[in-house]
Amino acid sequence: MQPKAPDADTDTDSPTHVDLLVVGLGPGGAAAALAARQLGLNTLAVEARGPEPTRAQLILIRPGARAALQRLGFADISEGRRTTTIRQVEQRLRAALADTPAAAAAPFHYHWHTSVVALQVLADQVLATLKDETTGALREVSARHLVDATGGRLESLGRPARVRVGKSHWVITAEFAEPPWFDGIVGVRDPSTHELCLLFPTWGRRGVIAYLDALPGPTGDGPLLASRFDALGQRLGLGQPLYTPWAVDVYQRALVRPSNDRVVAIGDAVGTVDVLSGNGASTAIEDAVDAVFGLAESQGAATLAAERALTQAVSDRVFERHRRGVRRGRMILAVRPILERAWPSVAFGSVTRDKVGPPPLLWPAVRFVFGRRPQTS
Figure 1 (spheres, one colour):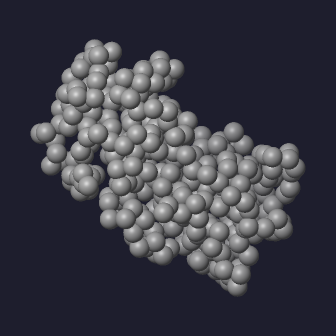
Figure 2: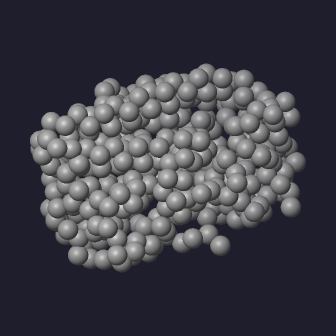
C-alpha cells in the first residue's frame, strides 16, 4: 500500500523565529525539511497547495539523489526501479513529515495552504509574511535562512529572476487507471506535427501514464496540444485521468548567478531541466540535502562573516549543479529528432491501440536510461 500524504498540519502553534524556513514541499522542499529535522534545526516548512500530490510525471532517481535520500533514511524510494513519478516521491516524503517524534531535537512545524506574500532579506535574518490561503490570515516569521523550493514563485517578491536559456517545449502528461494492454514502453509519432505520444505502465501495472510531447521551438500552443491529448486518450480508451493533466511549457531557464544572501534557491527555483532528461526532481533532492547540511554548518560558525562565506559556498554548489543539468538538457533536446524517428509513425487522427509500439532499435538505450523493463506479470 502506498503511504498517504498527511492531510493536516501537525500543530497550530507555529514559531515566530526559526533556524530554517522551507518554502515549497515538492520533492526538493520535503527533502530539505526532513534534512533540517534530522539535523535538529528549528524548522518551519510551508506549501501553498494541499497535501495530496497529483503530478504523474515520470522521473529518474539519479545516483546522487539516491545517496541523498539514503542519508535521510530512505533506503530505496522507488522500490528497485530507476524510475518513479513525482507523485509517488512526494507521497513518501510528505508522509514522513507526519512521523516527527514527540521528542525531536528541535521544534519542527509544517503547514499546507500557506504561501509567502512578502519577503525582506537582511544581513542577519530573513523576514517573511505568511498567508493562510484558506482563511486569509497573515503572520510574520523570521528565519536565519530560507530554502526556496517554490520553482520560481518567489521571483514575484523580488528574488532574482531566471532567464530563458532554451526552446519552448510543451508537454502534457496524466495518469489513468486503465491497466496497460502493452509490455514495456510504447508510443507513436505523428509525422505531420512531429509530436510524440508515449505510454508507460505504472507500478504493478495498475495503470498507464501518458505523455504528449510537442516539437520544441520558439513558441508553442498549449491549449491545442491539450485538445489533442484528450482526443488521443479517447481513441486509446484510457478513460478519465485520475488527476488533472499536467500541461506546461518546460522551456529551460536558469539564474544568471548564484544567490549571495540568506535565501538559498534549490530545484527549479535555480534552473529548470528539460522534462526529457527526467532528472529535475533528482537534482532538487540533491540540492535540498546538500543545502540544508551546508546551512546547518554555517549556522554553527563563530562569526557572521564565516556564516556568510559558508552560506555562499552552498549557493555556489547548487548553482554549478544546475549549470551541468542545463547542458545535459540541451544535449537531449538536440537529439530529439533522432529519438522521434525511432517510434511507429501514424497520424494521430487514426491511432488505435494496435498501432502503438516500442522502438526496437532503442531498447538497449531505454533499459540503460530507465532501468529494467517493466515486467508483464
